[in-house]
Amino acid sequence: MARIGSLRRLLLLGFLVGLWAEDEEHFSVEDLTVDGCMSTAPVLLQSGLDLQSVRRKRREDAIHIAEPAENGTDSDGPDALMWCIGVGFTAAVVGGFAYAIWSMETKPPTAVEQPPAPSTSLKYHLQCRVCCEWQVIRARVFPEWFCITVFVVYLDEYVFRTLAFFRHRQIVDYIPESWCVAIANSRLRPADWKDGDSCTDHARSLLNQGALKDVLHEMFPNHDESGKFVFIPEVVQVLSIFVIASVMIYGSFVRRPGPSGKRPYMAVVLTRVLRVFVVMHAFRPLFYLLTSLPGPASKCVGPQEQHMRPKSAWEAFYNFHLGAANCGDLLYSGHITSLMVIACTFFHYGRRLLEPQVGAYNVARVVIGLLTPVQGGLVAVAHSHYSIDVAAALVITPMVWRLYDYELGPDVEPGHFVAANQETTAQCQAQSQTEALLTRGSEMQKDKVCADDLLAMSDQEMAEHLQFEGLQKGIVMMILIVLAFFGIVGLTIFSLLGQ
Image 1: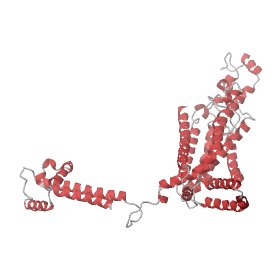
Image 2: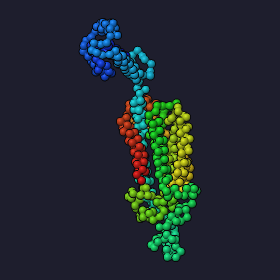
Image 3: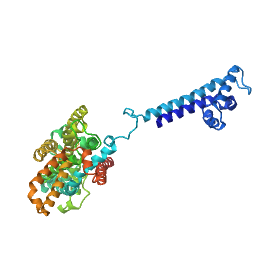
Image 4: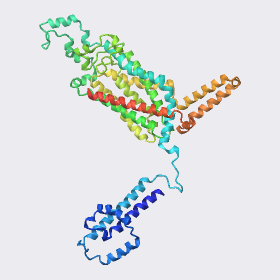
């Protein structure tokens, strides 16, 4: 009713402006503009004209409509008046209908307007979702997520990689020093060999530019020298992870339940991703620390590598300035490992996140399936890794993902943690009361039934059952997780652009 009243007021205002605009006593030639009509419209409201006087005035003007006005205006005045009237009336009608259409709801009108049910509100859906997510987060954030973060940020990124750099050796380092001295003192030494040079100064003159023989390096031998493909794989990988992870965050956190039921919980997905990620990066030091391969990148061949190489193994625990200049952490590729973990995540959860748009999932699966080996080829072409490093990551990562699913089974849900808490509480109460010990079997059976009921609950039913416990904490944690992800991606992009 409020919208109908607003529409009526707009139409009445346009009608009164049109009637009053025909009154020659209030208009002159200078007033015959849209601004003039709009600026003098309040005069009509102040003059107190009634409808009868307006009608008499219109009849008198109809008799003399062909005569020029007394103040010297020409016969074009009525046309301008009609144009002004039409503009005012049309603006009122269009504005009224636009307001009505903009305010129109998709549900059919009812006799008495009711506020939307809580279950249909996006805000209510997000609150229920966050409440359910919190049941998983509070069980995983400490110590599991905390320990994984410490391992990835400190041990894997700095300690193990710096130890690999400390153990790294170029091919030229395996040439005896006596040979290098003999070459320097020989009359047949290379023309570009100057007095005081060592074999390291001419390491790029070795076969295959001082690197191991590799198929992709043979096909693209000079791309690393020109720097054309140095940062392309880095940017492609960051953008790929950003797009895939953004789609999964949106599908898990914002979208309503689909045909298969509840969407995968973001905290559950994050737990699986972190576990597989930390297993893969825990295996890497077992490979590249046991056998050190000479790095194929230009930064890892020549005297600059010897100058930046750590002088002691203890530097691995406090020297944090060797991230970009690191050499030695080759087998297997950490770049492709990270991308494969995200790709496996999309293959595992993508259908449930995007349904009923299954076609979009199939297209995205094909794109990701083609992009991943292409990205591996770009990493090898950039001479950041050997082809064996890329191939090993492409094979081992899906195997670990499938092994995780086979050993640990399906993902847990918030109902598992709530059921565990209730069962623990029931057992504590049973131990404190002597009479409860006689009925422990029935109490445990009751807890099992309650656990099955909790697993079958929807997000709304679970949140209402928990009375929205931990809603504020869940909101804070979800915001921190999303900001941390986008912050890491942003810092990585800026660091790549700044190099």
